[in-house]
Amino acid sequence: MAEPCGLPEWFGRNTEAWGDTVQTRGISEVIDSYDALVVDVDKRGVFAARNREARALRSAFSGKQSRLVVHELL
Image (cartoon, rainbow, N blue to C red; front, top):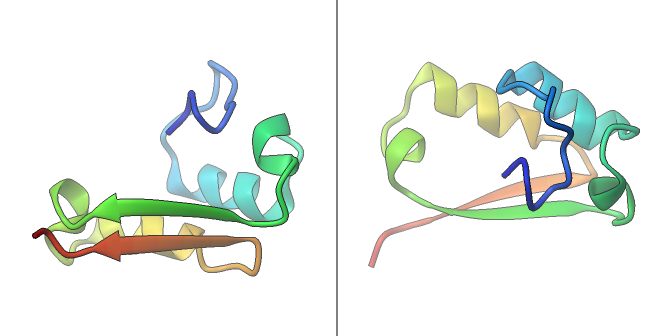
């Protein structure tokens, strides 16, 4: 997601940093150029199970300016 969202190379994989970037803005001109960021994902990998990492990532999208949409596999 780093490249399509225009995140700098120094940006890490910390879900708290991701939440700050999406909600507070000021890190990515790509994200900042939209009123809201919507990310669609398939229910596999980290999203296949209810685990701590998935919950942390979902909470990073819990603000008014972002939404994470998890789709069932067909």
